[in-house]
Length: 215
Image (cartoon, rainbow, N blue to C red):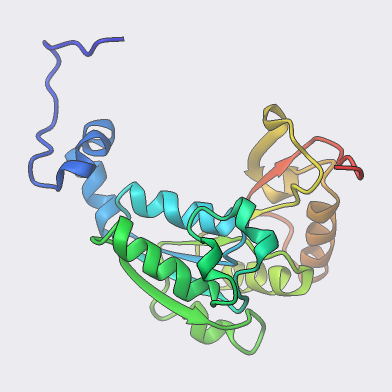
């Protein structure tokens, strides 16, 4: 639908041309807040890598990227940044190089580390927290540890649940983790958090589709 020329539009000229459409969408004030925001992404597999790339392309001011793994041949199909030449490189390094080329005005800090109880104080410091943490961790124990840490220190976090063997995007849901259903990973995470005294207050994305084990 063509835009209504009579409607007052914000002036995006203060930003590079690649951001102009985003400024028009959010407004100058809204986009200014995006530019000032920092987001920590933990886990740079299919979910975390796409999150980081899309945040940078949307103009986020600062990204903290955390992962301990390397690029593998089998992960190239779901990676928005890695190429065959990157196989064997740390995911953090490969993604940082990609974002330096694609989104040079986003500040990117990387940490090649495993997320756990002993590393969380450094990875997500309560004294200088990001505006948002994206939990894209696959392993259950580190995932629960991160979510408990963020909850205890009142650091905004959104967690991604299981998607293996699922293909119907119409069954993806968002909301409080306590509202999640069907997803086995979400159930395990809820159970472990409840044992730690946390039953609500964590934003999540999950699917109500039952996984097909043959996919």
